[in-house]
Image (cartoon, rainbow, N blue to C red; front, side, top):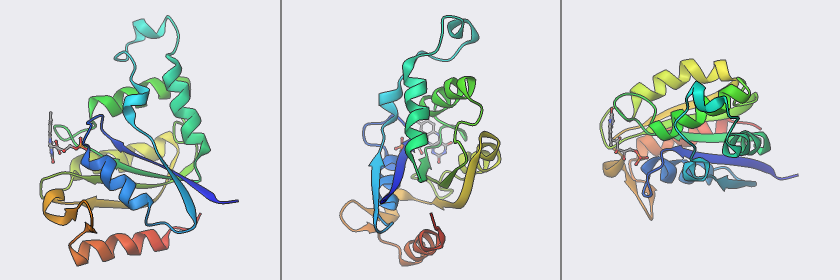
Length: 175
Ligand SMILES: Cc1cc2nc3c(=O)[nH]c(=O)nc-3n(C[C@H](O)[C@H](O)[C@H](O)COP(=O)(O)O)c2cc1C
């Protein structure tokens, strides 16, 4: 059966560069199907223990169900003030209350990009430490710096070194 990739950007922005980058990367894998999910489809009230007393929003279970469908997760995190976006953290918090193993032992290529030279390095470092606790099987990590200088909507990655670095990681992932 054709293997399935679930990809998303860790952002709710309509023009998210991370969603774009996750989509581009998911499509580098051959002989697979890729489904790109949008965090806006999992919008929930801001997590609080008080709201949880009334039960879980169905979107939290829906997100976990999507993760469960994946053979590989391709994730690119947006960085807001050195950390996860509120949109992503809210989903993580709600889902973790249903099941701490949010990523369900799925293989994950974990990335981040930003317009800056550090390429979302802070949020990537945070997630590298944290996601395995939520049972992400990290099979590759990649920070893509200075998005607007190195990515073209039609051509994809324009910097040869960065392109080769990412292709090497993609080729190394078996699933
Ligand atoms: C509230 C806020 C905080 C930000 N903080 C950072 C930051 O800490 N590091 C960074 O590289 N970029 C930061 N940025 C710029 C984002 O990287 C940029 O908006 C990027 O497009 C976000 O990714 P997205 O397009 O996938 O949403 C910030 C942007 C916003 C709106």
